[in-house]
Each structure stands twice: as C-alpha cells, then as structure tokens.
Image (cartoon, rainbow, N blue to C red; front, side, top):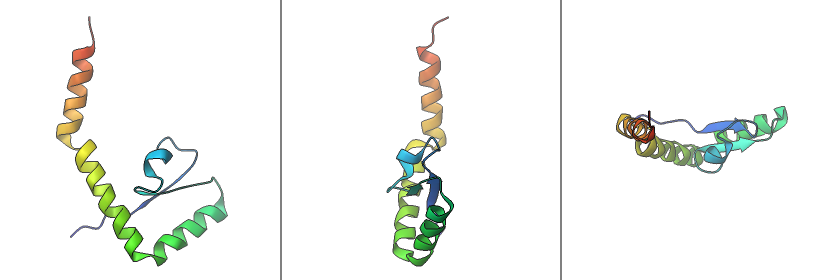
Amino acid sequence: MCLWPPVIVTDRCGIANIVDGQLGFAVLYDEDELTNTILHLLADDKLRREFGEKGKLLVREKFSWDKITEQVENIYSSCTL
C-alpha cells in the first residue's frame, strides 16, 4: 500500500486554501512555523495517514486523467471561433 505524504505549504502559495486541514497544513511564511509543523506531522502517524488518504481521494476525484480530459474538453467546447 502506497502512503501518500501530507502536504505543508505556506500561506503565500496559491493552493493554501485547498491544503489546509484537508491534505496537510498551510503555515505562515516563517521558518519556525514550518519547523514546528514538520515536527508535529512527524510525531503524529494517525494524522499523516489521514491527510494521505484525503490526498489520494482528491487526486482520484479531481485530477484523474478522465477528469482532466473532461475539463479540457469543456473548456474547448465553450470557446467560440
């Protein structure tokens, strides 16, 4: 079984709202904040597994080849020449 790792991003990235509390954590752009969050995740096996499972589900639901193809086709079909 492949365990997907949790994600830690800063509040300055474009996906912080997707990640925070669902796939991992969004932290302030601060070295101490990042260090503490990494240590927190390393110490909590259950939380790492939970975020990993949620990450797998998100990828399957929104970023599978079928979903991406569907999104691209919808964009192309909405364009008029």
